[in-house]
Image (cartoon, rainbow, N blue to C red; front, side, top):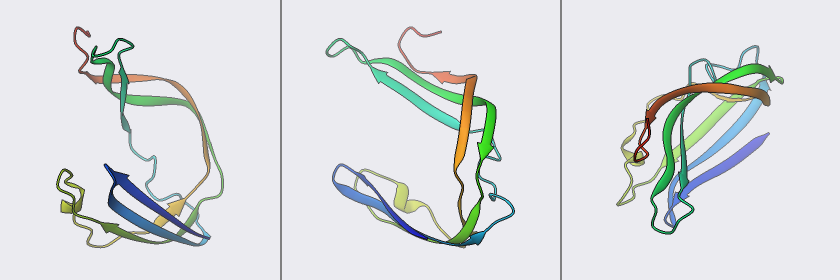
Length: 120
C-alpha cells in the first residue's frame, strides 16, 4: 500500500510524506515505546476569555490491542515558512516506515504542566 499526507498551517505547506508499506513486520518499530506527551487546550466559552484549559499531559492506557504491523519506506519533505521552524529539522537517515492499527482504552494520565490562568 502507498499513503500520502501533507501538513499545512496558515495556507502554507509545511511538510509532505509518502509511505510505501512493503511487508508484515514482527514489531512496530519503536512507535508507542515511550511515554507520550499531549497538549490539551480549550478556549473559554466567553468571548475574549482566553483559554479555559491549557495543559501538557502524559496519557495512560489501561489496555492496548494492535493489529498486524507493516514496514516499508518513507519519503519526507519539510518546507520553509516565515512563521514555522519545522524546516530546520534535519533528516539524515530515515529508519523505516511502520503502520499498525491500534485500539486503546485510556485510563487517566499525569498532568505535566498547566498554563491556564489560576490553575493548580
